[in-house]
Image (cartoon, rainbow, N blue to C red):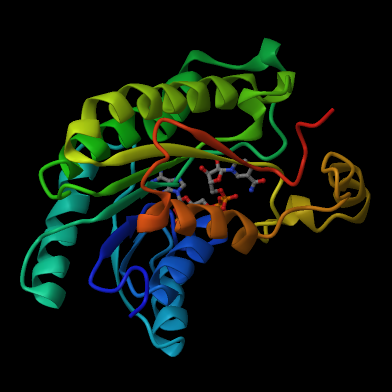
Length: 255
Ligand code: NDP
């Protein structure tokens, strides 16, 4: 049998990018993938179609994180879908991947209080509330994986608020790892470096060339390369890892 057969996994923000690759990867290992999206229902359905074409199982749930009632909305759909597909509401794996990103960033001098609230609401507060709510559904031995960023380790002034929000997310990993250890639930962060998620900024030749230089391998990461690390953490083979931050940057932090 596959490593994750019989398991269920929610991946927030899996309508595209790293989240989509992660949902695909988890489903390939046998998990029923719950594909979450914020605005792009069609893209989420594409992820579901890709998984099904690949022989896997998936369904989509929508909720715009950071807006009032989003967590309830997400869990209502999640529980209904799980019941429909499995006859119960067990969630084995939660991947907090959705995030508000500002690709180009902005000068620290120009950041507004509203922008700070918005980014923290999606990148830090929502993952906390999702984790808190998911605990009622996650059995002993479950998995929580938070997608952080290499900018928590390397100064990038134009990304300061985003980096602050990911730093807060890493605290979720640290403290909940201790809190949930008695239940053998592991909590870890994965730190991607620059990863080609298909968005326009990664296709511009000059910018792409420049960003590629950050990695020791002199190229951008592929979503699958980050997803592979997440999938490993979700398996039983990773049971001795908790409270850790796994580097998935292609050596971008080697200096
Ligand atoms: P994308 O921008 O390609 O996709 C973001 C996903 O998150 C989409 O599925 C989007 O859904 C969802 N999302 C965004 N905001 C919300 C919201 N308010 N409510 C619900 N869903 C939302 O992201 P990436 O694949 O590039 O990044 C995935 C993760 O990896 C993020 O946590 C990011 O911070 C991190 N990361 C990425 C790096 C990179 O270079 N790509 C580098 C370092 C970290 P929809 O479109 O349907 O609204």
